[in-house]
Image (cartoon, rainbow, N blue to C red):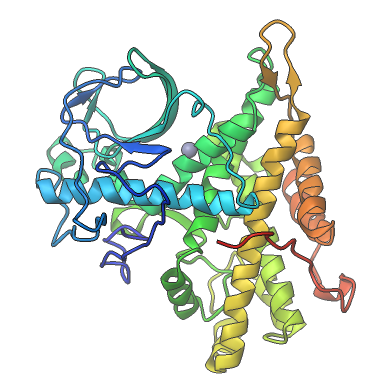
Length: 443
Ligand SMILES: [Zn+2]
């Protein structure tokens, strides 16, 4: 699989990943929870039937790594289609495994999984009778034969090729080869599973739920990216350890021509965005990425990889080009020391696992805060931005026993209430190690 789409420099070649399923992998690929179907032509939402390509076959040892993509992706080439199906399966499986690990390896059932598997459709060209599908979608619906199912349907970025004669260019960049986009949609599926929908008539709750869903999608991709050693190595090479910059981690969803769908590192406050869900997601994503950066820097200071002054300056200048104040040069000196570079790698793992566990606990808290609707018997969740802030603090209590509450307050109050206090590492309790709850069982 590709860990960034193949047009991104440094990620042109696919990597072999190992996915261990005790029950083995079936043709498809398919396992006990996920089933891949590569539909041939038209695909109609909510009707999961139609002609499909034969399921991809594993080799005699049960592996799929004999597949490869040579040259430009060609969705008419049967071998490329098979690879794309495996890429989609492997990414979805990986993201589910990562967040199951953050749940102390306890399986959480997806929204509709009780009835059926998560179905994934890698290369959908047309939907609803000949309409081009220029999107990637996490949904659930009722199928005549399968019953209620969860699904992910992936198309092509036609919107990036507005001229009709250029549309053919879009098919070289299918969303299903894009790890960030896949992980984002899987983030929707997991969030929907754990955080119940708001009551239908409650517009405030629905608005914030929508914004939060988009933010969670981007952050699931953000955390999942860092589970590849190759990605962390490239990131350290690219940034010299100063992650507080625009880089391959903080810009999500690489598109052709160097574009990205959204910037996880952003300075938006709630007042500066509209109520459109993707727009509204940005202050929440920005706040949680700031929390991640501070946890990373704080740990790097505690481990002796960098000093407080460099940490303060890097965080303060995070929305500016890397060269400001000679920061790039200072970080260059740090990573030239192999021991310090290794410490930074550990700090990245640490901050990644903190954010991953924070998200998982946050979803669980949302589940706890929901209430049963007397009429429908379904759980419903009411929310606004201050509830979200309160629940993130509660999640931190679960993960770090509240040790990071100062960091969260600073990052969220900036975004929600325009409190633009400067952060200074010297204001944190000195000598106090950030505590991260350890996994009971390691995979
Ligand atoms: Zn989304």
